[in-house]
Image 1 (cartoon, rainbow, N blue to C red):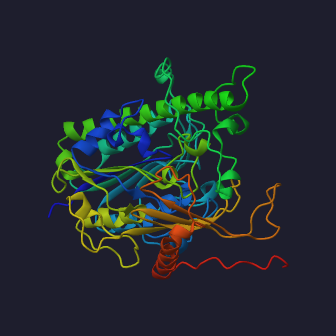
Image 2: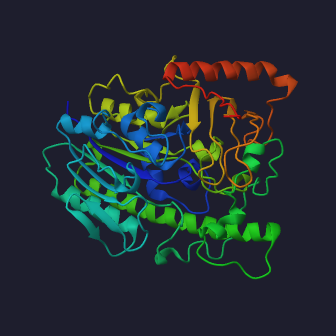
Image 3: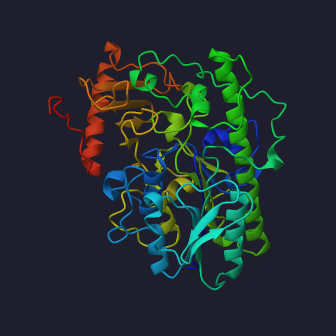
Length: 469
């Protein structure tokens, strides 16, 4: 068997709603759409912890955050005990390289392992004239980060050994805040009013855990996440609407640069006769609120935050135009790529190969629910820690105690909060049905499923502390 090459492209904060292959968007993404058209698109793909470092660890290790130990942005991957996709492919004879956003060691504390070559951004890195970190030290660059990371990737492809298969992981910074777009895209959407999401002015009725969050589009100026100041005199919903237009246009301009650069890589594969023998993946570490619920950022277990794009092209094994709405997870990525490479999936990996879905088949025993957990209680935007279960129709979320007081400190009486949504009737997750007597049976069934998944995956339910301690 000829082992395929792997081109694994990840974005940061790229919501499926900002790829035109997932539906109508203000900006087309023709090169990303090409991967879907010539391969497969998964429509119910989710992350299991919507924050950068843990999500990247899950993609690399095939394990959940509680297993890898990478629960928060401050955790560092322990390469002495963690097998990874990169190290397994490297041991199997692949030449491996990583360029771009690594973010698996707080403050750059952990260098990439399992890669023959790497050139990565320090933590978040900069959009313009970024420095990168290499085995030889810091390296300065001039230009726009999305272009530069693609240049580095293409240069490595030119210098690789053509007689050995490769794994190339390109981790884009974009479209992460502060949404700094290239000047060549400044005119994109300049004369367009982007439609607002229906829930931009959400009142959070019945959802106190959402009401507490400060990740509001209307507050983006306070976080310096907008490129310009608003006109004088704007207040209330008018200010929120202005912030949304400014934010979404900057975000989509960043996406346009990603799409262009993905096109450069696809063209390279075509020009060098590599397309048929290369698995091309495009995905994101997590989703992103594009104004839904009045939010930006991620973290919550709501759909815009946890749903991620997943596109995969491999002409030798994946029929063109394949789609699937089976539940897929980022914990599945490493097992999938190992199986496509003809390698054994380590027993320690908790995901499952997506290969049947990519071929248009859903096995009878495929999962019908997923487990999610976010640990960073109040660390950013006052989002409380929580876990939950999502089935094909319903979602149950538990915000488990120790609420933050108004000053952001943990304390006060503990009142755990639950949310239950019927995703078929309420896809925008506005109506909390947890205390609805008519949904008591569904509620208890989901609580049982939550406990079952925690036991199966080896995660410990939160034990409420004694408030008096």
